[in-house]
Length: 271
Image (cartoon, rainbow, N blue to C red; front, side):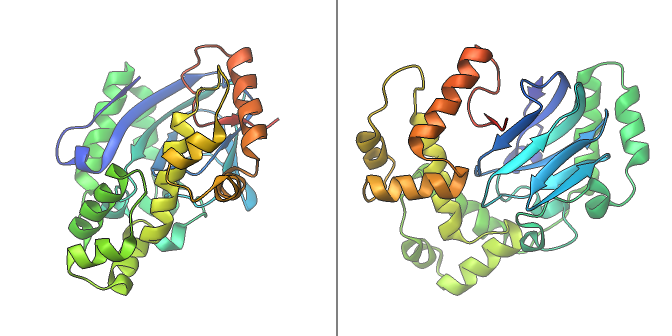
């Protein structure tokens, strides 16, 4: 289950969620998307491969990534978590987001000891109670972040355009230099505005794909704002490690083996 938190958290977070059960595959690859995540693990440890292969027991924090992340799940998983907007983690981090880019860390590395919080979450009677506890914890930890208004507004413009924007125009509209805007983005999101725009454009292309039918790659690339199909193919390989054709084959495998699964867009079988 999931739900949108109350204000002001809703301006930072897409949803709070509870997850329990067997994953569709032991390993799932998540292509980069314009979002970040915090996971508080309540079950057996899971593994993340993002450069290195690391086991996480208490949970993890992943800021907006620039490359695919592979999750290795135990046979049964149980957790609560947060799907942040790209700028969302900043008010909860004790360090610049740039220090965490493509480097998942444990929750304790960010928040300090969380054993008590995990115990309270695990003892909650129902998922709704867990999400309320998590929401209250986030409200308690919420802090000010210098430049958040600028980054949030500019990111919103990038999102509304599906990434098809000129970064120089965004800087001029905000009345700041390209350098200043890039610095704020790296501090609060972990990546530059240009990289975030690329991620939104890739996400728009992925969400426009209907894996149940034929795909007109030329048309899809053009509608997503890519220069040509070669540019589109290069971005796909950069973000997923796969060609567009191989990507759609893997998506179709997911649909065949797990029809109607909630994770049928985004995560891919890594096996």
